[in-house]
Image (cartoon, rainbow, N blue to C red; front, side, top):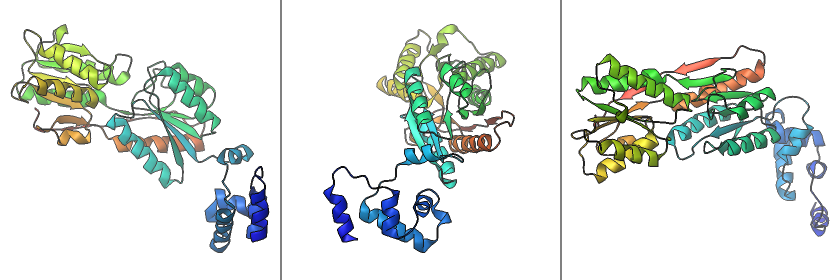
Length: 345
């Protein structure tokens, strides 16, 4: 064995392959392949012998080549594209996806699109090249051409958080109307006479649903709904800060803010603290999303908690169902959010 290894080391262009590992372990190449791809099917004693040979030779398994040789079955890899890796909402969804996939011995490739169509297409193309079994991804907007093209090319997709207008793919969504109405009912019952809204971009179904429910709740309670009490942001912290500056600078500023996501709420809080305003004495604040920091700020932030881990786990379940039953009817799962009442309201 030592002399064989020395001969291998003398050649700088030699690539160690399955045959070399099989010879060193005294097994067939098929056994080496099963050890790498389906280890549970190999006897433990044999598997350990193969693994020791791999370590001695410094063999590196080429997963891409292995998938190219595969004629049946799956790659056991899923793609996950999230629009904002800094947003804890999507980070928690990713955690749910990874946990559910790992339980099925499936790996996850995580990509961050930054809500950029070019980046989304780049990652979709990369994931297809990696022969992933399917992709979990929020739509960029209702008629997302990249996702529709991927679906047309027979790539299994599950939409999360946001949906396509065509509703042509399996999806896992949250009841944004219910979550917003819970928040607004809470603020109205607390007696806040004017409630402004810092909303996300209208291209997103989530932002439109929350904005519509905000207006619906105001109308139901006979509360004022002037256009100046609505600020359209982009779901990022900076736009939350800009929205708070604009709304709090009005001649008659609102007494409460309902903010469309956690990053914009963080920006709004920065402005509120910079102005020296008391929460909720001068201005109450409620946010959609329940990031970990919501309980750490002072006062603790009232939020609409989305079942983020459940979104991830359900998305994996839908994708595996689609892989097992390609012709099954499209399924849309809508999960229920929860109002977390804390000190900011």
